Length: 333
Image (cartoon, rainbow, N blue to C red; front, top):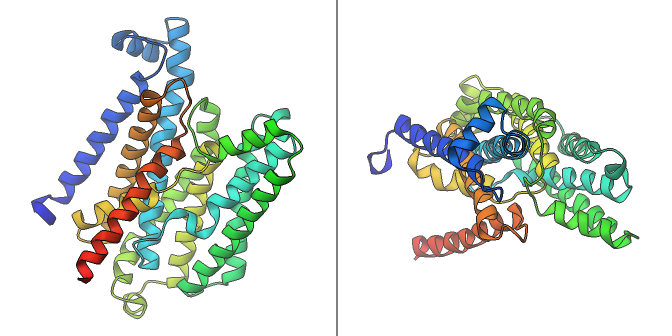
């Protein structure tokens, strides 16, 4: 293990960081509630306005931060392991773009104004539609390049339809709401959003954690993995459906939050020896920690301007690509 860091110690460190950031997230906000008052309001439900702030505003936001960050990190590691490409990320299969399209249609048609859960439900429907279309285009047991091309096609189509909805929107306020939602945020989320997304996220995690050993075997090649008894068609189905379930649910309640599924597995890979089976739990914890930290930062940096979560993660992710380019150029020299 690089730098002598043991795998259990790495997981313990990431887990501790996630717990600490979860607590900090609960204590961060414009309400100005003291530490002990916050804990009392959260645990006892007493304290009037303080209890409402802790239990109905900050707690759902922190829980969603853990769930969504873990989903993005885990699915990114699984896709990178399956496609054997360190630059793969959850949006590659068109799931995020299609979930965004479903949400945009809910706003564009006015359904989100008439029914508060129409937006996340239509976003989930968009994610389900994306994975069905990708599977239909690629076919069962498709080669990885075919799967990637199908995902690119679905992403392009969903992006074009989203742009069309923005272009044709007769209501400038609806267009502005669409743009803001697509930037990603955990603000004003409630326990209803937690309960809505939780079953899909847990189902996605359950599917992805089943493929760890198979992805380790795939590092030796498809022929070697098949010889070891792993059914590659089943592995592909679990990776695609698991990613669709947890990332689709995450996008449906938080909007598009990019780069976490790409950056976190890439940073942690050298620390786990490049094994996808080890990288997936580490990336889940790392993704949760990074998203919690980013959500805390948007509340601290510009609390009065409502800085969007997706904007901050993009500002972090873009320099990462520049660093990666310089790193590859140095290695090639």
